[in-house]
Length: 419
Ligand SMILES: Cc1cc2nc3c(=O)[nH]c(=O)nc-3n(C[C@H](O)[C@H](O)[C@H](O)COP(=O)(O)OP(=O)(O)OC[C@H]3O[C@@H](n4cnc5c(N)ncnc54)[C@H](O)[C@@H]3O)c2cc1C
Image (cartoon, rainbow, N blue to C red; front, side, top):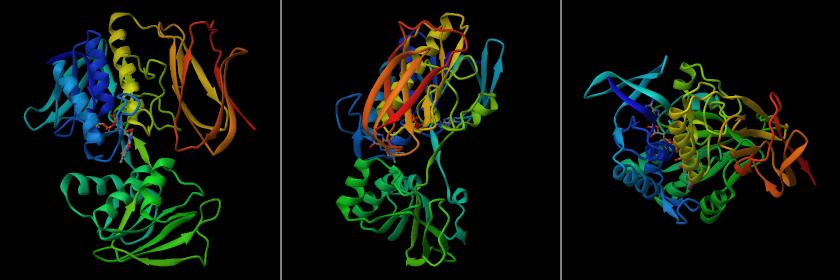
């Protein structure tokens, strides 16, 4: 049976960086990727805007991925593509992975530490409960992006987009550039879900209307989408009777959210955070199960690839460090006030040598002139006034815990004051 110090699941930007970091820190590493080529979601993101923080350049998704693929090759890191990880079992001294591919069939690989970098998936039409039939012409934004950018197919000629997530906004522009008519983006919430820069560059620059507090209530068509019914919604997002309008179209593109892929983590009994839908981790990105690390979109949905790579690096370094010393963790929780949607990591290992904590958080609602304060046992370790805080924009804070004296069971607290 093949045996590695570290196995990384997923060859997206998180997994590639994690594998580089674990290899550079002396761990024999294998990357397992279910698709035929490494690069993850970046392969289909042909627009630019990637890598401004990490490389100081505006790269396209494939260019950003290529830089990492090259580094993985230069470092002779083992990678198996077209290989799906179907199961993982915990053993006394590590893990046994059940992998499947068309060369070896089902086979097993052993490792001492495992990094989950398997990204996220899109919410589908089944998960948004739209009435009507299910004709051809309904796509998630990522699938439409794959058809246009990778396969060279046009999924529709005249469409509406449901949801204002970033992929939907990017696809509104992409479909317009390819000659389709995008009739509008319909968002049930009173505020857009995507980044401001994408609202401006993908909708406003192309005169594509954004309709807030509106949703699709019915889809018409037998073989192919013929029309949709749009309704206004109240503050609880329930459709308001009498506001229905019918819009003729041949396509519906859904951009209604992403969910971290965590079937493997769940099978291992790893504790999942209901807010992020990813595992609970400490500052080393170690999950509730010792020896298993999580990073990138599998941990929480990121808007910038640079932060995905950053989390991969920390997970890779931590996995390599875990091999060389017996990890005996002592975990303190991180608690946050109701203003926050989530904060990652959710715990601090107070015995860890790593006293650098990179915290990512999102707010629940839009906040203006809000001060975020992070306290530990009556000591303020971070305080910053933010002009604007918006749920689609993830914030990142660097904390140095060197001077903190930890007490067992004492939580790190994040709170906010407005005005
Ligand atoms: C449409 C779109 C536009 C974006 N635009 C920008 C932008 O302009 N700028 C920016 O900075 N960021 C952008 N992002 C965000 C950024 O690209 C992503 O956050 C990042 O690529 C996620 O990386 P990841 O490695 O966590 O996941 P992915 O890239 O999704 O990689 C996960 C990999 O794991 C593999 N995998 C999953 N399960 C298994 C399994 N069981 N066995 C084997 N392999 C498995 C998958 O096949 C995949 O290759 C965009 C994202 C999207 C979707």
